[in-house]
Length: 132
Image (cartoon, rainbow, N blue to C red; front, side, top):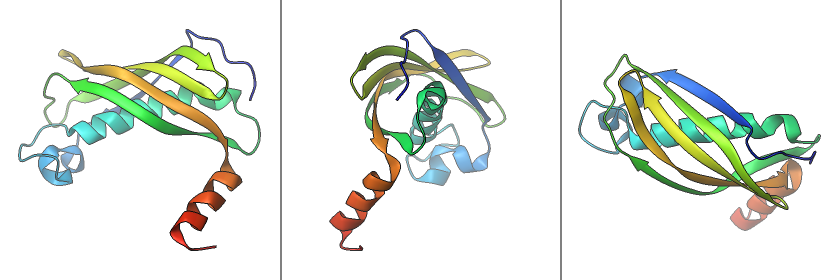
């Protein structure tokens, strides 16, 4: 892993479509942006912050995500998630994540990711599942 500097940020965006709604993904019964979709967009922004600092064969995996989803977003609106690097502790990285739509903020929280070797990580997962 190359040296990472706190303060770096990146964004990810998505226009809310039918497949992103709570009633479509099973996280609720209303036709509004699903919390798991907002969370995934936040993780996507976090991955974008970290990608330039990874060496060949490295990736990051999410280890915790603590968020609040504070406002509903209707279909057709655009959601922008932003991740800002807060702290680097060895291979553990802490980021602040936020999300907003055209009307304003819709969510915020913190996210931790861990730098791993891709092949080794997948191998360990397969061994846990009994598929070597």
